[in-house]
Length: 450
Image 1 (cartoon, rainbow, N blue to C red):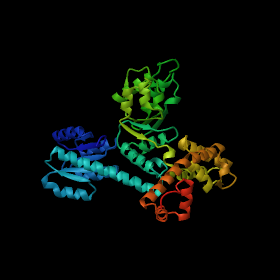
Image 2 (cartoon, rainbow, N blue to C red):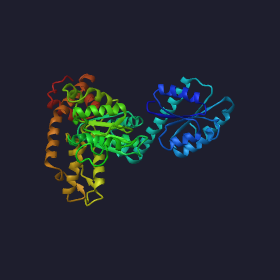
Image 3 (cartoon, rainbow, N blue to C red):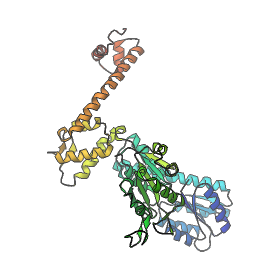
Image 4 (spheres, rainbow, N blue to C red):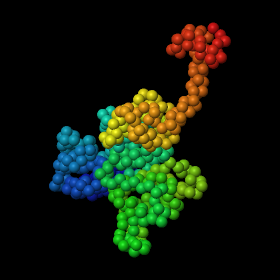
């Protein structure tokens, strides 16, 4: 599993080296330690997904290390390596919380298969935990709102992407919550305790962009009296979220690409490089492929950022989430001066019909505005802005011909399947025969054969 960190603990250097090479070839991030004490010191400074340890070692044994590791992180998976003579110890280790054990000597492909199974089970546990939290709180990762199929699909992707440290590109229209997705990825990841640093690339001043992203040293330019850490380095081992990445000028794109590729940053005016440890997430509402063809965005940077990608659905494609979103916005504001606690059925119907070109951001603005204007505890149609009411009506009129065409087609198919028998066709459609006769006349089908 890519970017799953495995810590190999064994007092035999040769075994550590062989296992390390095999697991790195399989795509794992690998660290090694020659003793239990060394392993615990490493675990205190960096996250570990899987601990692969020998049971019989000088000093701290594998069983003692298992207990200590579980105290540091209850989520860590421990796989123990054991000789034939100590299988009983391995079975005891399973009772103490070990995930699996493997008997020496073992084939390297067997080791990678075992660890792959452990990593997959870990991912499944995370997804199940997320599902339980959703059922309990009605919220997705990072507190996101929505239970539609489109959002469920997005939640599953967030959990999968969060486990890896590769760059990811979040695509979607303006107002669909791309920063919320980035924060959810960060919060679901192993380094969620580290900083989350959002950067609005479109708001950065062109003259200060390089110093803001990469930092500077004293004397780098007029007025640079002291060292400043750039935004990329300030996240530590956390996450840097580059919003509206398509707004970066080409020169800055080139420098960012180098930093991501080399995993290092160089402050303005400095000859020294600092390691870039943060994960890079980027987002845009622009069509980057078109920008590449127009020479406005670097293709190599696009491929570097687009290792993993997610797309936030527009609100019009998940209208069933509107009631939950409205309830969340009202709940958020009800703790202030507003006395609004709900919304009328008629007002909610209008919200469900509106096309939402501004997506969730537009919905939140309209709800907060309606709460400010409302004279009672419930938002009424009159509290909604005129442009929303007009937009909902226009959308209704645009949908009517489509609905009528679908209804007419259903009647034609019902008549065909019943050999033109209108009473049977009405039963098949689930409507009264008088209703069917009226619709036949409305659609010019009253001459259909009996």
